[in-house]
Amino acid sequence: MTQNNDKRKYKRFSCSIKSSFEFFEGNPDEIDPETHISEKGKGLIIDISCGGIFLISNSKVSPGLPIIMKFQLNKEKLTLNGRIVRTGLLRNNPSEIAQKFSSYASKGENYIAVEFDAPLLNYDFSTILK
Image 1 (tube, rainbow, N blue to C red):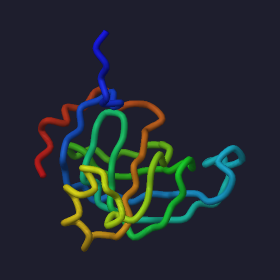
Image 2 (image 1 turned 135 degrees about the vertical axis):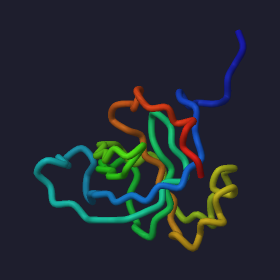
Image 3 (image 1 turned 180 degrees about the vertical axis):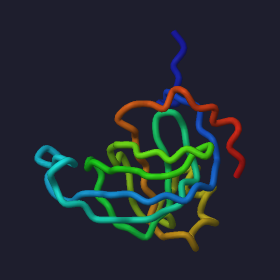
Image 4 (image 1 turned 90 degrees about the vertical axis):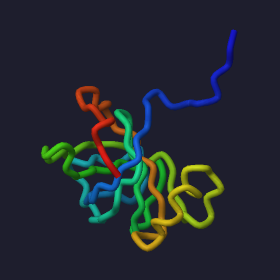
């Protein structure tokens, strides 16, 4: 049996998409995005797939919490619910993708990895140009 070390389900695409988002603070098990008051943030999506995004922002968020992403893709405005799976300072992340995108530091000092609640299966991300 061959072992695949890549845990990602979907192919990723580099991009440069401005976004806004709503994020929450507190216990992830007690937060309901429909009833809890959110904080607002802005960022730049620099990597996207059917399953989620990687963005740069000045907002400090916590992993495990819900996030509502708002951005435009192929001239369509999207609002997508997701969960923050990783976050931290871009300069402190040794991962290949963080190093690759460290040149975006002027756009924000934090990276945020988001997994969508439901995958975007009907988009052709190969048409996105950075």
